[in-house]
Image 1 (cartoon, helix red, strand yellow):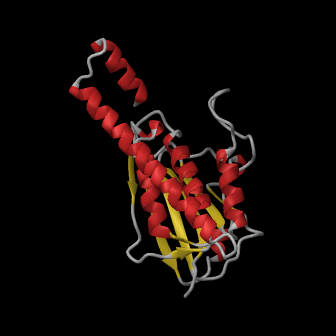
Image 2: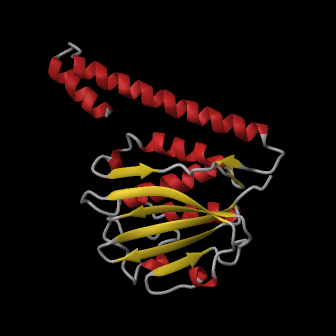
Length: 227
C-alpha cells in the first residue's frame, strides 16, 4: 500500500490528490490498530507473567482478522474469520496463538496463485479427540501426538482453504524445519515448524486434512480454561 501511495505522489509531482490522502489515512489507521493490538498483548503478558497463561479466544480472532485485513498475500484471496457464539478462554499465550493463526492463514494465502477462499473458525469440544482423528492416513496427519493432552474441554480451531491441496508425498514433511516447496528466496520453511512448536508448548495438537484440488484444513486442538 505504501508503494502505491509513493507512485501516486510521484505521478502528481508533489500535489497530494484525494486518492493519496485516502490511502494515507488507511495506512495510518492500520498502523494505529496494529500498535493497539501490540500494546494489549504486551500489557497482558506483563500482568500475567507470574500466572498461568490464558487468553480470550474471540479477542484473538478479532485481532487476527484486523491484522490480516491489509496483508499483501491476501489481496487476491477472500478471508472470513468467524467468532465463536460463546467466548472461550484458552490456556495459551495470546501472542503465540496470534502467531499460529497468522502463520496458518498466510500459508494458505501462498498456497495458490489463483484466488481462493480461506476460513478461520472454531468449535467447542466437551469430549476427548477420537482415536480416528489422531491416526494418520495418506491425506491426513496428526502432529504433536506425544505432547498433546487430550483432555476435554477443548477447542478445535480450523483454518480451511479451497486451494490445490498438499501432495501425499509432501504432507508428512510440512512441519519439518526449513522444508519448503517454494522457490529459493521465497520462503524460509519455518512457518509451520513454528506453529508446531508453539502448539506443542501449549499441550495442543494439530491435524491436517487435504484433498487434491479441493483444499486443506489445519485443525489446532487447544485446552480450554474452566472456571
